[in-house]
Amino acid sequence: MGLEHVDPAHITELVNGCVFPDIPTLNYAEFKYKRRTYAIIHVPPSPLMPHVTTKQIVEMKENNQQSIILKKYAVYCRQGAKSDLATPSQHHKIILNRTEVLRSELLSRIKEVAIPIPLAVRSAAAKGISTTLRVARITDDPTAPAVRLTRSKDDASGVFLHEELYDGLFEGINNVLDANDLIAEGRNEFLLGEKVYYRIYAERQHVTGEGRRVSLLFQTATYQFYAPYLYWLAKMPPAELARILTDSLEEERHLYMRMVISLATLLGQEVSNWLFDELDRKWRRYRQKPNYFWTFQTIRNRSGVSDVRLLAARTTPTASISLPDQSRVTVKELLSRPDQAAKYLSEVCVRIFKGDKEYKSLARSLDIFAYANQILSKSKHVVDAIADSHRKQNLNNVS
Image (cartoon, rainbow, N blue to C red):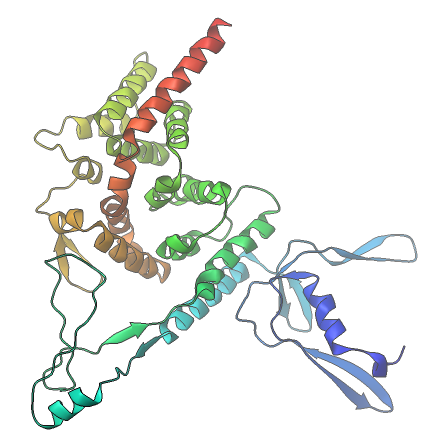
């Protein structure tokens, strides 16, 4: 069949049948040289990268040996005159480019809004009569600062901005997670690195999918990176939190146990007492107990502090926190405004993603201030789930 019978749409369909997500633009052209016609397929840089292969294509050679032309669940990179499997560093660069595209797209959605002014108001303003524009607020906090809009540049302290979002804006974050699933080939592993995890946590509320994805991100934060994780726990049912606590009795990794201790502290005194007694029983027969046990004991013995958030964060209400923009805020202010703490947390996660590693400790503290209340609200149900687990275990031991 000659090239004159080739349908470019069919080529696009064939290519996109082998990759995920679909390549948005695929250009086809023909080039004639020395009485021969050559097909040219041009793939522009894709804003949806990485594109992961979804099929394996093989070629049979004369000796009945198979040659793999396209490997399934892989990412390829162009290197010189050929395409090879992407290296770990290339994987990392692709994800960085993708998240930068998302960031640019988000910023492009912010624009200055022209507010229509009724004719009567314009006429009054032309005569020098003062006019007032009412602004609808999304908060009922009486301490929130007042807002006044003015056309006078001399009186204005800023520009009124309107952020226009659409549902598909954050699909890229989930595409990144989908790509990880394909690369992992069914294994429950996060392979995209610490920086990408922080970028995902900066937009954690837009992560969709079943509980398995939330569990994967929780395990990634606690087992691999010692990164913020409480948002994922807040999404889990109490029975899952109880399972994490009971399973930790067989765990000895120091950083993971620090997370467990923080979780037990945030769940209140009853859970904290139970876990401490269990750990004490476990390590009682050993001459030397692990460091995390003494850390737990220090937290529990802290006198005069009843707020579990302060215990878990190991701080005081009057402590001052320095934010990346050089402003300072007290712990007391953050405890009273979990939503503000969550906002700062997202900003800090982006800074870490860009390479500012010194903010990791701050991110963990902000995580506590933002989501501790949601964890504490599950306390009673977690206690019931732990008790139920013990009853079932005792029944199994008897049988």
